[in-house]
Image (tube, rainbow, N blue to C red; front, side, top):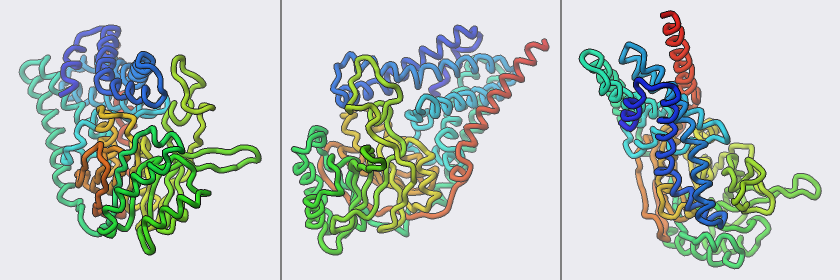
Amino acid sequence: MVLAPLVLALDGTSARQAAWLGWLAGSVGAAMATAPWITAATYRYFETGYAGASVFALAVGQLFHAWPTALFAVGARRLLRIPNAAVRALGVGAVWTACEYARSILFTGAPWDLLGHALYAQPRWIQAADFGGAHAVSFVVAVTGAAVGVALGERGASRRLALATGACVLAATAAHGTFRLATIDDGDPRVRVALVQGNVPNAWRESTAYADRALGAFAEATRSVLGERPALVVWSENALSFVLTPNERFRDAIAALLGPGGPPLLLGGPRYDQRHPGMVEFFNSAYLLDADGSVRGFYDKRRLVPFAEYAPVRAVAGLGWRFDVPGAYTPGTIPVVFENPEAFGVLICYEAIYPRLARDLAEAGARFLVNISNDAWFGTSAGLEQHFASGVFRAVETRRALARGTNTGITALVGPSGRIVARFPTGIRRAWVVDVPLRDGSTFYNSAGDLFAWGAIVASIGLLVSYRRVSLGR
């Protein structure tokens, strides 16, 4: 129902008034939903003042929330003049989906806090993601809100038609969700995975002086679950802040921890490669280590965080870069599937919000997904929940379980059905063993990608152009 007040307010407005209302709604929404955690993360990460962090957070809200909502409002305002109430509700839903997809791919792309993400904890209502991604769920939410908004501005048959349209979309979504939940099993075959939450302060990860303490924290939590004989141990993104490969002391410590015949260890850490003489490139990577501490393989993060890991622009006034040279990390290029103990793929931190990366891993043969992250930069803000919410959709879209191993939380397991099978407390040092379902096969969304979202764009343009011609003809 979230769009109902805006849709009702847009009816009868001019284009300028609609743009203003949309901008205001997007600005207020961003200020409430994302600005607090962006401010907190910017303050901690860049060690800047609260004033500069707040300005940066508000600017991000303008770029990824305010203008798309303003654009939606201008388009919706025109469609609200269509005589048929059902077409109005469906058309407004399509315009919202089109604008949401646009902000997901433009200006570095930010598919964060989408409308459909609000339903992440309601598995019945998010099953449409297996054919249309999170945008299909956003469409359902948008149409429902638009139908209520249209109905509030109508009487008689038009009101009933608007409400019936919203009810039919909801009924179809519920029926599909019920059917899919009955057919998607979160049971066997499974693999036992230990998710280790080190709860290590960021300060420990920024200096090699704390390397032993960080290693000790993760090792302490890991020892508590080795007796449950996990087939894989997962530590978080950048669990250790030093380069692993030449470090014999670290390798010996891992071998002593896991023991002969112990499980492999997946963990995040920096990696370097000298691809050209005199030039070293650094990567944010995930390593798979054998029980003796040797490196079996690695994956380089392909989608880097703007400003934090690469520089989309050369400089921002008042925002100090974390690296001596902006863009110090290099993006990876290959979707790596590890084969031990079973075929699985890794999404590092921010990558979990991008469905294409999960689809690549599923198509490459991954039987389950692992998301390693360090969300300590969010503190206790809503950013923790919003990041986790987006990851739930990767499980539904690919029908692959998502095991999430983090430094401070949210550490969890999401089944192929989209059910949150296990979710653990944040802000504590502990490890848990979960049985992760293994799945093969594909989904329509795996094959077709964002076809639904592009369909919403085509439908929106078609409706706007057609109605304009009808209006001119009058």
